[in-house]
Length: 532
Image (tube, rainbow, N blue to C red; front, side, top):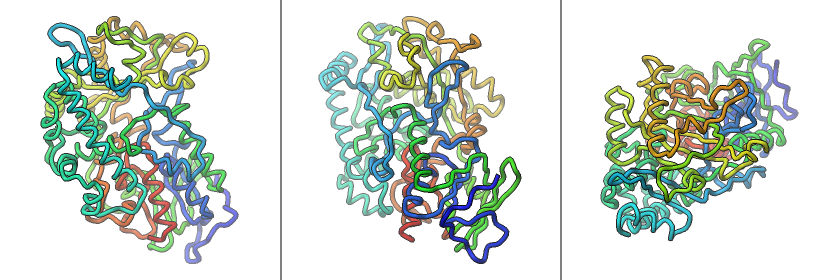
């Protein structure tokens, strides 16, 4: 099958033997590629999107993973924080998010008594929960001071994500807080956490934002944990993480609709296999069910990893990335009761439910995984999207009180799965659920729903599974370690440039990439439209 010719295609005169010519060919139909396609098409450019899979959306999709069960889960990407409202407005997207009533709940046993830390439900509830856990107001006061600092940084840094890259000095002046700059940009985040907080559990809850998708210690001198932390606390200028109404696929469906409505051609089942360019015009060779074709373009935007870009252009690939997460999707007949008598499951699971994420537990898990062994107490966190957005459940499931659970396991680097992916995945899943069970008044297994074939509604994905299914390099959800949101050696004005003037990187591996943000797609489109 050959993509149809756009009505206003611009053919590069020196390129021959091509199927069609476009102003822009976008390799990859994930959310960033769709953002770029929509912006360029709305600006009157002819656009072709080549997507290897039979659907668009990449990792930001909603699926029904359990046979015969009407539950639409955000299978790989879960929450929204980094998506600027500007993109939603600019593209007239029919897309909404809902805030969570609770930020987090962390169960723990203290002096033989089950208890926990609730953050959310109002300032008074949060303060009382800190006091119940720690015996004083000190940690709550420190919490307010610390997140007041990150909140001010968020207000100043987040708007820059859709602007040309500032220099490091420009961003520092914009932050205008030397204490915050030192804590977030110059010293390992563990230093600031230990300066502010004394309680091990509170320290751990803070640290988790530095470890989502990043395999690092709190005191790693490379500061990869700091970069991860920064992107997790600046979203929307507040750091709040919201639930996409209708599931994550609602966003990519809206983006695909916007791109098509503007005239972009979305060709699924079309895999790009080579990019040739002379810096002024390019040819993208692709294959599909009907054979092989070539599309000519003035610009090529690559919504794939930097390693995939190197492969497509015949260049030396960057060092391999390594993902470090276990992803688990579940459907429950009911939320399990908790051992903490003060915890209501509908409240505890409404935010991020932290498991085995005390500060020392995280350090121990990291050290063990770095030595090549699965953590004995795997840290993880759970999200129950159906509490915030029941529309992802069919009416019958919702009426029965059923719920989705999504678990994200930390400190499980791809190297652990190399010897036997299936066996290690099952081993880590069992030990992760055992840590959760330690805080429940009933085993989770008794709450799992069954699919149409009688099998438990639970699926797990390792980094190697994500690499196979989504071509995430090493299963890394950010394609590579996040970069600081300012200019660095080799970056261009928008952080999407590649060294080839008409080939741009619009995926998570771009500067200011990662997460469900659309930022790299927006910035690549702006680089084309501004000619910078």
